[in-house]
Image 1 (cartoon, rainbow, N blue to C red):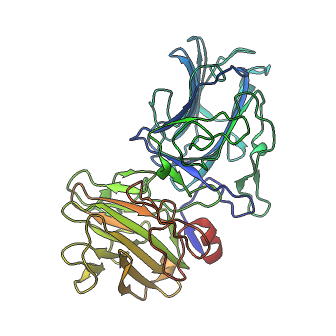
Image 2 (cartoon, rainbow, N blue to C red; image 1 turned 90 degrees about the horizontal axis):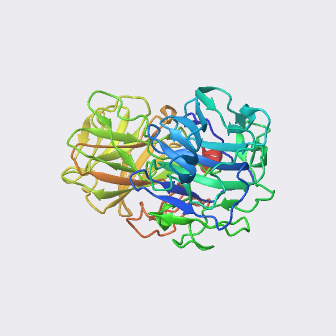
Image 3 (cartoon, one colour; image 1 turned 120 degrees about the vertical axis):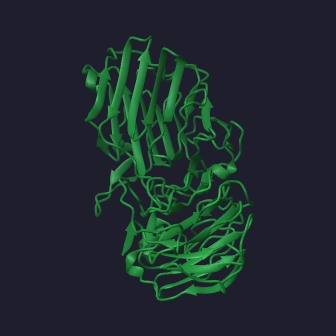
Length: 468
C-alpha cells in the first residue's frame, strides 16, 4: 500500500503517455510568447493544459492575449483559486474566480477554458472545466461579455504562456500537454476521459483540427529558438512555434500527468516548534535558506513498501549543509531529520554522522559539503536505509525501520545560504547546475546523475503502481 498526499488530479499508468512537462519558476520569470502573423477567430477558442503547482499561494498566468491595458484576456491562478479575466475596451468584462481552491502541490490538474461569444446565453460564453467537470461555483462572478463580441485572443498582438505578455504574474510550477484550438468550442472529453476502473480523470490524445492559430505544445525539444527544435515547438502541424524567455533545456522535465514524481512540499513541512518551512524554488526541487534559523523541507510521496532512490545536490553548504534523510509526514521532526523518532538523518556537521531519536553516531559516514551529490537508498521491504556520497556507499545506516508509517524525503538545516536541489528522477541536471548523465532505473524511469543501486527505483507513480 502506498501513501500519497491527496491530489485532485489524474495519475494515469495506462497506455497513453505524456513524456515531458515544462518547469516555470516565478523568480525567473520564465515564459513563452508568440505574435500571430494573421488573425484567427476572435469569438471562439478552446485552451487545454495540465498544470502542477509549485507555490500554491501566488498568482500565476497560464495564458494571456493582450492588445493593450484595456483589451486583454487571461486565465490564471489567483493565489489558490482559478481566475478567468477578460476586458474589452474597459466595458465588456469577464471576472470569474472559483469558489474552489487548488492548493495541492502534488497534484496534476487538467484545466480547460472554452470561449464562445456566439452563444446566446451569457453564462455559456465562457466555461471552465477542471479534471473533466465544469466549474459552476464562483466566489466572484462578473460576465458582461456581449453576444458575438471579439476578444483579444487570436489578434495579431502578442500572446503569452506562463506569465503575462511582459513577464508579470509568472506561474510557479509545471505545465504539460498544452492545446489551443482556434475557432472551435471543444469539450474536455476531447482531451481527457474518466478511467473506467478508478473513476480518475486521465489524459488522452486529441484528434481534431486546430484552426489558424491553434497549437499543440509537448515540450519535447530542448532548443531555445522559435522553431520546430525549440522548447516552444508546435507539433500540431501548424508550426505556430513559441519563443522562450529565461527557459532552457534544464526546464524540460520528466514529471508529467502520466508519471507523477515526488517533489518537495510547499504547503507543509517542519512539524514542531523548532522549525519552519524552507523557501522552495525550481518546481519545488530546490530549498534555500535565507536566514539563520532551523528550517526543513519534506517530500510529497510517502511509500510504505518498495525500494526507492533519490539524489540531493549540495549547491551551497553555507556554514553547514544540514541533514538529509527520511521523515514520516505529519509527525514532529524537531530541528531536522533524526531529532525525533519520526526521522532518520545523515548529518553533514563535522566529519559526518547519523542521527535518530536525537541519538547521534559520529562513526557513520563522511562529511559532505558544497558540490557533493548525496544518494539515499530506502528499502521499505526490509526496513533499511543507506546513504551515498558521490556514488560511494557510506554503508547501511539503519535497519528495523517500521515501513507501515510511510517514509519520504526530509532535509533540515540552520544556516543561511544553505541550498540543496533534489532529484527524484525528474531532473538529472539539478536545475541546470550539473550535466545530466542519463541514468534511469531498471524500469527505464528517471534521469539520475549516478545509476541507482540494483533493485532501487525512482519515486514516481508508475513505479509506485508496480512496487508500492
